[in-house]
Image (cartoon, rainbow, N blue to C red; front, side):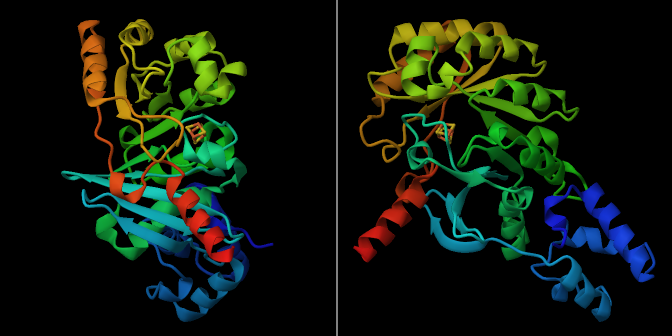
Length: 349
Ligand code: SF4
């Protein structure tokens, strides 16, 4: 089977190419011309890399065929948020959401098709786990946008789409390198945020990376009992262990907290959350529950969200109540795919 250069870090791709070029008797400087066509100035197929000699392009196509993601659905919200549903080679589907805000364009990417963790407020969790994505499929979500229009290239990346990135560590590890390296997509480490529910062994591996990648923890519950109710991962990696691990992470952490009406939005719960956030000096992102994300749960009222935010601030915690983006285009994680599949089933039945 041929090597897929898009699954390799730029350094590894360059090494694989250099070896192949040497075997063919080509000058090794060609590797410096070929590698940028993977991520920096990507081409959909080698035939488009017209700065390379035609015989070399044909040989590259044979040895290292390039495969992309197929755009299945594209929605644009009235607030400028864009949602992309990509079809993969085996028929699986994943999604990315591009959120423009001033000069910033943040792309929320998926790391798995589906998710095994079953958080009760999450559309992806209800779908179950399908499979891990390869580095080509994760970083490819950025590549496809650049191929369509270089002006769409994201300035920021968040791993907050479908899946738990730390349950797909090897591919995510390579993807972080592809996203960050100048020879890759050249996005600064501080502009790349990995979001996790707290898979502790791989959190340690992430923390060991020397780059200043950012970490967001999907917390949503500040006590073990409530966390067990909302997030089954509590049974495997309990909240006190997670908090201990975060204290060892020597960078500022963001805690993500979806406000669910009558579940986790009382002022007493805010006090519990403040106690966890204070020693970490964490930033708390408060997110309204996306109404379509979980049919049996209701978002907190606006008044309760504001009271919750105020209470955290009174306790000395930096808290920000975020707007829910793309409400009109189903931009909760996993939701577009759920809707498209439901429609397809409706058509079949
Ligand atoms: S919130 Fe994240 S970890 Fe939980 S089920 Fe959804 S995708 Fe998985």
